[in-house]
Every structure is written in structure tokens, then in C-alpha cells.
Image (cartoon, rainbow, N blue to C red; front, side, top):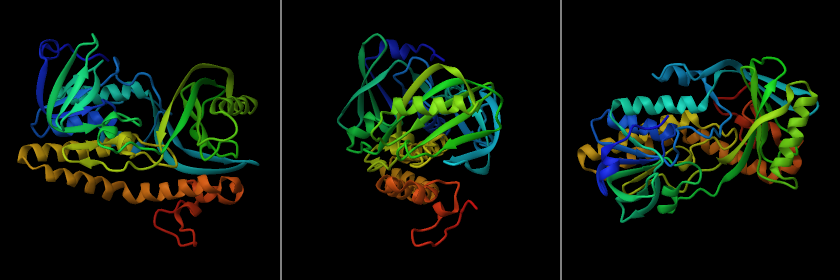
Length: 373
């Protein structure tokens, strides 16, 4: 998907807009849609030439998310009934978690089309270079020409290594690498599969079915073996067990935020999605939270513009914290414990993964609502 050419983009050395969003992923496009529906002017810049490419995602979404969106279903590849969590020695836990495996690039493009159709302006192949003062961003277009955009409010939705977050001193130090290959399945599968094993340090491996193919990958904190070598060993296991056929189609990699950003609101700047550390620190899932928090950010930004009151931006922090705060805080505590105690893998692992009841108990054994049974 390429954005339509804008005469504004071609001719202006400087432009003003009510809200400038950096990043056109799920958080950015959702923020744009929510804001533009309130009647404010919204501009989104993204360094990529094609939305959603390259894909750096296992491509699963919960069933409930699809019901909340109005973007069609052309990006859906298959449904899944739930998740299988697989521990060493054939210890398998089956959890009901209906969802869909998607073409992530088409999904992101559908979100952008909806926001653009509502009136948001998208500029692709456009990189945010620097912040001037607290309201102007210098950007660089595809020809290398630089110009500036002045905005009342800026939303950083530019991923794990967010440049906007760095500008406000909120860079997230809690990141782990992930790598994934696309492979042919031996037979169709109805469940996503998660593998917890000692050599995938403070992380997990996954096999997510996608029609007649699968996304096979892992994310991990580190260890004595490189992540690529660990992936090779994991893929060999999947081949031996008859899950996938030998031979990978392509490889992608990226970074997963596994801890909170230092702050998500700073004067007239908001952070959303991966830039705000709103990804689940244990599972790495982040599409649902990115869309939800993006909406919160867009609505708060629009209210602040319309009422000319930047203090209203604090309602964004309250909204997303009320919605996700307890879940993400518990997950971050579990991640810290998991990283510290990984050498005791067999003793601690069930208290560090969402499929098990122990995950929802305090370390003294007190159970909280939401236990997985």
C-alpha cells in the first residue's frame, strides 16, 4: 500500500497540523482514526514505503479484536481454537483461546485505509529526523528533501526503538530480540503452539499455523548460544517431530518490548503501542493493546486540541493504565523473576507462563482473579 501523492507534501517546506503521529502501525493508525473522527487535523508519517512491510510478527490476533474492528476480513488466513503450551518431557497444556492468524501487512494496510478514508493524512517513505523545540518535527521524504511539520500534539507510535521516546527521555531499555522463519506445514493445525524449554532463555519458541504454512520462531533474553543458533536447533526439532517440512522460505527479526516505558505523557507528546511498552512482557503480544491504547491516545489528543488544554493529555495515561496496567505490571514482575531464576527452569516455569494457575498467584500462593485453571 502506497499513500496517494499529496501536493502539500511536494510543495510545502513547513506545514502545521493539529496532531502529528510518527508511525503508521496499529497504534498510530488507530490513534489517527480516533482523533480525526473528532474533527481535528491529523498527519501521520512513516519511514516505510509500504505499510506493514517487512512483517515482524507471529501474526495472531484474539477473536474479540476482529469483532471490534470495521475493516473487513480479507487479511484472515485461518482461525485457531486455542493454544498448546508444551514443556519438556511431553507436558502439554491446552488452553481455549479462539483467535485468527492473519496476513499482518494486509491487516495494517486495512487499518490505514480506514483512517485515511476518515480524513487522516498519511505520508510514507517519510522519516522523523529530529524535534525542534517541543512542537516541530523535521522529516525527510523519499527524495531526501527535508521539511518541518509543526503540531499542537505529537504521538510517538514508532515501535520498540522509538525515536520520539528518546526525544522525551523515555527510551525503553527492556527489549529482547526475536527471529522467525516461514515454513511449510506437514499437516494443518488448529492450535498455536508455544514451547518453553531451558535453552530458550527467559523466552519461548512458537509454531503458529498459517494455512499450509507456519511461522516458526523464538524470542529470548540471551544465554550462551546465539539466538540464530537456538532457532536452528528449534527448527530442527520441529522437523524431527513432523510438524514442518525442511526448508525455510524467509527469515525476519525484530525486537520485543518486555517492560514499561519510563513515561507515556510528556507535555504535548504521547507514546503508544510498542513505543510505550504496552506489549505483554511475557507473551510479547501487542496488537490488541496497540489498537486500544492508540484509540485512547487519539481521543485524548483530540480533546486537548479542541479544548486547548494540554492537561487533558493526562487522561490518556489514566485510561490505558486502568485498562491494561494490572495485567502488564504482573507480567513485568513475572518476567523479572523469570530472568533472575531461569537456572531453576523446572521449578519456576509454570509461575511464569499465562496458561498455568501459578502465574496468577502471588509468590506467597495467594490467587488473583483471572487464574487460568
